[in-house]
Amino acid sequence: MRQLSLGVRLNDAAVFETYLPGPNEEAVSFVERLAAGGADSGAWIWGISGSGKTHLLQAACRAAGLAARNAGYLPMDKLAKHGPDVLEGWQDRELVALDSLESVAGSEVFEAAVFRLFNDLQAAGGRLLIATECSPGNLPIKLADLKSRLAWGVTYQLERLDDDQCVSALKLRARHRGLEMPDATARYLMRRLPREIATLCDWLDRLDIASLAAQRRLTVPFVRDVLNTAED
Image (tube, rainbow, N blue to C red; front, side):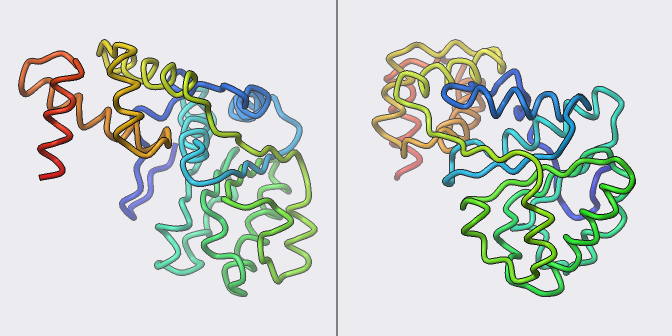
């Protein structure tokens, strides 16, 4: 997979194996097929912040790369500052994932660039995977031709995980890192931190580093000390 020289890297933990589908099994299954080249169209994934959109898009790009398929991950909230030229040169990709498309919606130059990318990908047999925080109908796109083009394929809304699913997701991520996450520790984290799986997993990464440094397991007292130290 082509890497950008713009400071964009895939998260090592953003793979399908660490994504707990929960109520989003249909969406995850389709994106897995899309990454493998078995889907007839692209997809639009939307959901509130922390619902797992970025993880899913990065997992798709990583899986496509492992299957020897060219892919590109473009987080528009981070790349918009570089101008619409960041969308040039991706037409030979078999999969392009546009994350946070709402960041450039309403901009004539960016909308024109997305329109060209869509057409070029379609002509070459590539697929576009889009993620936004709002539904397609609520995205303020001004370019009518782009709006009609993006009304293609399938659309999935990602639902938030419930408490038990969040516990399972944390334990799944912990196992991927070679850690043991007791239920009590996972539920303590959920009481102390915002109940967003992205935030919880970010903290798990920090706790992994702290546990290695201290040679401690992820017990509730140890995690409490780490969180209290961070707050101080």
